[in-house]
Length: 113
Image: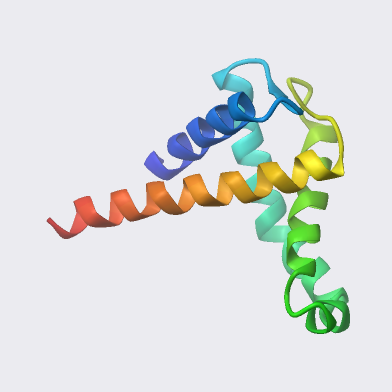
């Protein structure tokens, strides 16, 4: 539950940092986090399976494209969230990944102590 709330916070902070990404409020950021986690759980493995040759050819960089496509799909399904284009979705994906890894490191350090 804490990870979910932190992901919502990361969505809100990332949208604040990027002028091409807009979230109306924290409630919509939580909805984005939920739909994004569902997309990453269900849709991402299917897309990775279908694009294995292209992913190998690009040395894994095509996975960034898959992340951006999933974010654009979240933009379509969540009304209080908008992304102005593919490149903003790619930047959003990268920054959100950085925030999530920082939050994960902090929560793992607190669990060890």
